[in-house]
Length: 314
Image (cartoon, rainbow, N blue to C red; front, side, top):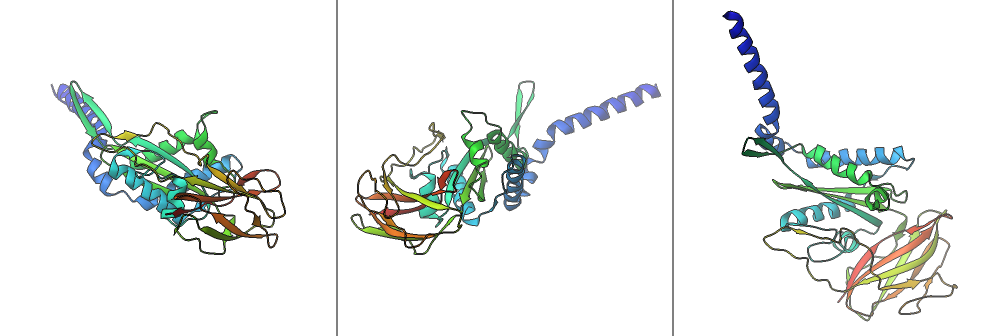
């Protein structure tokens, strides 16, 4: 008789442990959310990204606070307005958001990812929804991007781009979704004049810049034009942007260094080098809209974007 009681106690104890294990994510979900330290998660993700880069022989990135402002702004707006896209709710692309809204001047690349922020426990016909570890969710989102295979490996290429030396992380979450943003940056050019956020269409915008490394040469400056954009769809239902990517506008002007033949889609202005490491010139703003200045540099082997500055012509 006693042996049966002991066996029952052992069985019930094991069942209790098993049930507790199955329910732990649901019992402690509220506490886990309240204990989340977003800044700690961001620095943890930078360490993961640098481990991925190290595994591929690529130098690490440092934490970029301006890029982090842009990334966090976008994560917050996706959560608050119920959408997922590289583009902001007002329709502006990432490079405009980073520069025009956050004051950044570095070359940028953006990864965005969306995760499910809960588990479903099924007990017969009953379903119980609970939270999961946010850090694990975000790490998996990054891992999925890192493990992409060609030709659908744009996120992986951004993570492993050797011309980025900074990164900012944005994290926002609701009861059901996690919004994760990586904004990578490349610091190769210092602008010696303040480029205003706005100007009047029909005016010239002066630029004066310095290349920070003697090993780099200015190849050209591309100026991309984006018209005043329409807002993304928003409403009672969640909006998922099926483009799932972004790129610079096809509407562009090409400026070449002085004393070189000039090619341009719309005009024939030159950017003139005053010294080997410095350049200056004027950008004509023919129409109302956003203009993004992107110097193209060469390290002797590859061409890459050296900076990214946007302004608005009204």
